[in-house]
Length: 338
Image (tube, rainbow, N blue to C red):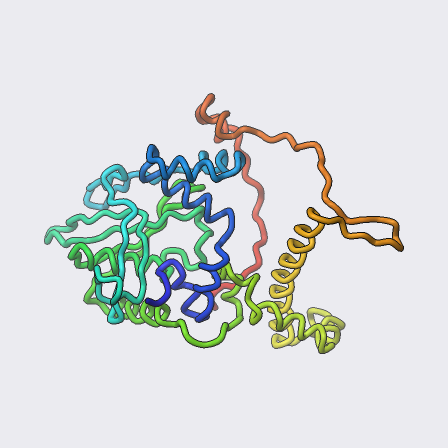
């Protein structure tokens, strides 16, 4: 089997990203997402209760403020009720991009959060609407064009004998849908999607490839990837970084600026790994500096006050929105398509 559908956006660029991400995971954010999915699909199950118990009180309070998927009103006035949606089911595609129930023949497998299969238009075309639950509108760099969503859409459409699919996102924090265009399975767009899906799903051989995708897509295993971490250290050791940084931003060539940017991202990840390792050691055994007469160790401080947002919203519905403030525009640096 190849790469999972959830990792196709990063596996498209790097053959090691999927394995690294599966091995090391995506941290607490993934645990919160999994728990929220369970609360939406089957809130009273024992498994959902277990997942809730594995979150901290702060994490649980946060996801209780997230929005459960709303109903969808189509242009023909059909209403897709979330209560009636198919939820949490497995799909798979073979090496030709066709649907398969035989996992031994599958090159990519995924789990769809929810979907509706409906007849639309005067001719009653059978269409699969397949939204994926994401934390916010900004969680997925490519939005509804994400290869993960295309794979879910294609597989769901083929599984249920549809003629087209519509990929989408439900932004849990924001409480709204984003929908991509309807893709006919016999269209050039669907063929392009199929080729991209298979290319990414079968991209499993070769060494890791570093680049903007490491932090931009992102790869959750990058903090354990030598190809991502070592180039920055090598550049520092070689002395070229010092020469580059002596120039001003106006004098810096695009080649040098790109080098500095990639090195900065690499070192940022590396420093986080180093800091966490040092903190973990110091919690067990203080690090002593005899000359300075100090030791680096863990200490307890008084807890900070926080607002029980979930409890307040439950007691006074709508009060958070009434007093909500939005800051001015925020400058965000990141990779964008030219």
